[in-house]
Length: 154
Image (cartoon, rainbow, N blue to C red; front, side, top):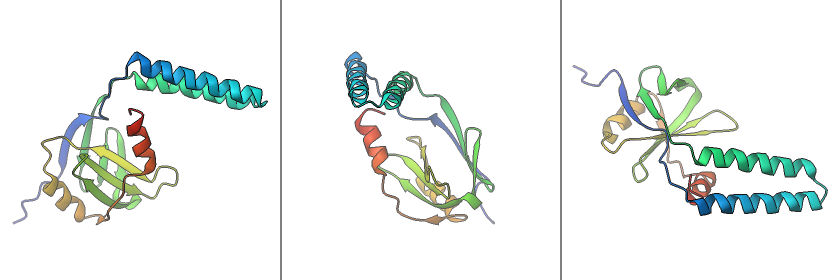
């Protein structure tokens, strides 16, 4: 008799919130203005506008609190909130037990890795066994972009 669950579900914040001090926002503003001024001095006005818009967007995102997201692994695929990642679009998975992430490698060109946070009480073995039924396991190194985002406080 098969005792495996039909699905595995959990809820957690979509990302780990890191408080940013007013100094962080001041530093962002100073770097953005200096970069935009340099772009204008070199005659690249469009790049200056992109820098200012990007820094405003970044500061708005930095102050936002994470939402509680429902995650589910079932026979159709892996669901994160309202987004379903069918097994047919996924190449492999890796469970990062240190940082508590489920890392999925998809066939998407622009964002090939999907990071799903795992709660502290998650049964890693159960998740591992369930995913092995449908996906290959492959060691995924943490991309440099993820390391940079952690370094700047995201």
